[in-house]
Amino acid sequence: MTKEIQVNLNHIAPVVSETAVTALMPEVADALSKIHNATGAGNDFLGWVDLPTRTPASLVDEINATAADLSNQCDVVVAIGIGGSYLGAKAVIEALGDSFAEAKPGAPRVVFAGQNIGEDYLFELQEYLRGKRFGIIVISESGTTTEPAIAFRLLKAQLEEQVGKERAKDLIVAITDAHRGALRQLATEEGYRTFVIEDSVGGRFSVLSPVGLLPIAVAGFDIKALLAGAAQMQRATINANATNQAALYAAARNALYRAGKKIEILVNYNPKLHYFGEWWKQLYGESEGKDHRGIFPAAVDNSTDLHSMGQWIQDGERTIFETVLTVGKVHHSVTIPTDEANLDGLNYIAGKHVDEVNKMAELGTRLAHVDGGVPNIVITVPELNENYLGQLIYFFEKACGISGYMLGVNPFNQPGVEAYKKNMFALLEKPGYEAETEAIKKRL
Figure 1 (cartoon, one colour):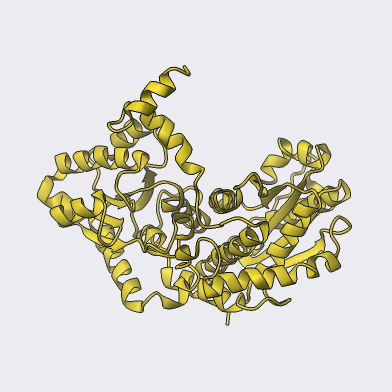
Figure 2 (cartoon, helix red, strand yellow):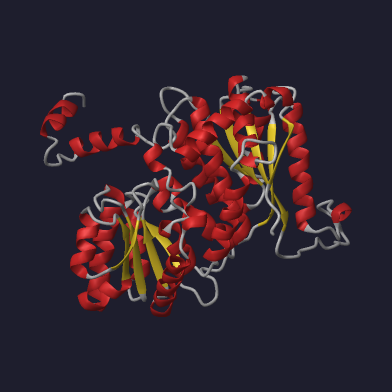
C-alpha cells in the first residue's frame, strides 16, 4: 500500500502543548460520530464521506470513456463552473501538469469559465476558441447560477455557430441534478451526455465526484489512482486516535484557535500547489465562517511570497499560525552550475539540486517563523501524483468536517453566500425582486 501523508505537530509548542491537543480528542470523537452516523447539523450533505469507496468502477469507466471521446474530438475543453465546481479540478490539473505546456501530450487543454463575470476574460476566451475544435463541460446543479450560466450561454452559442447545433450537442457534457433544474431540462431536451451531482455532495466537497473527475480525466490524469488515494485516506480516518492524521490536524488547529490564533495560512513551497491553496481556502472558509466564528483561511506561495507577505508573517500581529505543505520528491533534476566569475556569489551552492536549496529555504523559514511566534503544522506529501493528491483532498475534507463541528457550526451549509446574490439581483432588476430593487436604490 502507498505511504500516507503525515502531520507533524512538533512546532506548535509552546503556544499549544501536546497535552492541550490530546485534551480535545473527546471532541474529535464526537465530531467523527456526527459525521459517520449523520447525527450533526447538515447531515443531508455527507455523501462525500464514503464517496471514494462507493464510487462504482462502472461510473469511473464511463467518465474515462467520455473523457477519451472529448479528447478525440477537441483540442480545448472548457470546464464551466464556479466555487467547488471548478476549484478542485483546477487544483489537481495544475498540480499534476507541466508548468509551461498547454496540455498533457495526447490530451486537450482544459480551460475554465464561469468562475467570474469578467467581460474581458470572456471576450478573450471566445477569441481564443474561435476556429478551434472545442467542447464544453458545464457544471451546475441548478443551471441558473449567474456566473456559469452567462459563460454557458455565450459558449454554447459560439460552439453551435462554429459546428452546427446537431454536432454541438455531442461536444457538450452537463454535470447537474439528477431530476430537476434548468440545466437538467436543457440537457434532456438537447440530448447532452450527463453526469449527476448527488444531492448529498456539496460543491466544495465534490472534487472526487464527476464534477472534478471528468475535467481531470479529460486533462489526461489517472482518476482511478486519485480515488484510490482518497479511499486509503478514508479508511485511515475513521477512528479518533493518534494514527488519524485528519483528527490530529483538526484538534491542533482548534487548539490554536482557542489560544488566540485566528488566522491559518496554508503555505506551499511548490508553485504547482497554488490552486490547491485556492481550493483549500474555499473548503475551510465556506465551511467554518459562520455565526461570527471560524479560523480565517489564507494561503501563500513560498519562496515567492517571502518577498511580500514574509515580512508580515515574521513580524506582524501574532494572531496567525501556518500549515505547511512540504513535498518530498520532485519529478525532475536541475543542478546549479559553477560560474568562474562568481559575480552572483552562488558558487557555494554549485552542484546542488535546486530542490535542495528550496528545502533549505523552507526549513529556514519554518524555524524563523516559529522563533517569531508563529506556530507551524507541517503536512508531508511524499510526491505530487494522483494517489497522494487524492489522499490530501480527502484528508482536508475529513478534517474540515471534524473541525467545523468542533467550532460549533454547520460545516455543510453556506448561508452567507446568498447575501451578495440578493443584492445583485435587486440591482439588475431581476423579475421577482421589485421590492428589493426599490429598497436598495434608496441606499445608493
